[in-house]
Length: 355
Image (cartoon, rainbow, N blue to C red):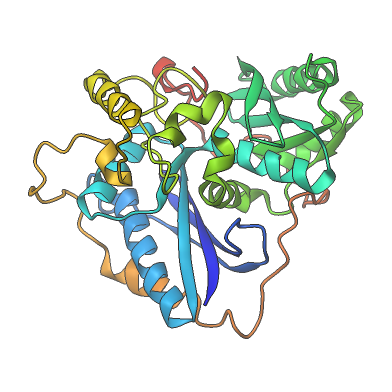
């Protein structure tokens, strides 16, 4: 039975999914899909996490029916509240082998894959969001992140692009001497930025071949290669579950580029207890890394059966044709007009991906 890895990008209005062959998520793309979540018509709490849970369960069923084994799932997110709700739903439904990764860390995983494909020892990452950008260096050997520099972008798009040019032009001068630069975006149109940044940097610029699926692919890579992140910024998270590599999204709160900000301090004492257990040789399953005060309580998120059935047939035609060979270092994508294609809300001060 062939092994596959599922990557999911969860946004407030859309869910994107990609299935990749190989236990390291480094094979061909078996299938991909995306669907809108209508939050206007039915503004119920947990609408998007509900759809993601249903999609994961349905994909598992469809994978088994298609002769595949779903080895792991990575979910990347942009909304902190929805990420916390998804975490709670995963715990409630006892769904294992699911890793929640911030959009930044999904981009880090993708950058590590680029470094591996190009034989770079270290690769710079420029991660661009509608109103902020982060420059960092990713070590190919272990996925560790260093020299993280984050800045807000101006409302004026010309000025915002100029600020990105300034960041890209300084990438080659970083102390760790990266050998290439990877450009990944979330909620922005990359094509407008790419030519300007290519001219601004002496490093070779790489862009994912399908920008809209890049973070889903990165989430799959992160979940499939969890042990490789056991260094530097991610070491503490992955150490919680050495058996499976699952990670609780609250663990990196307020410390490192990671999963959720430190706005839920009640988990601090629990993490200290988990660390003490780890020192004593005890292990924890994925969903035990979060305190469950009422294990019998019903979750507020009800599964969407329509979404679940849809995901069940996701792999139905995968044996007939592979959609495409997923290249992590493609250089061409279609032109666009604006750096910010949709109305984007500025993040509040406590929503920084990088603390």
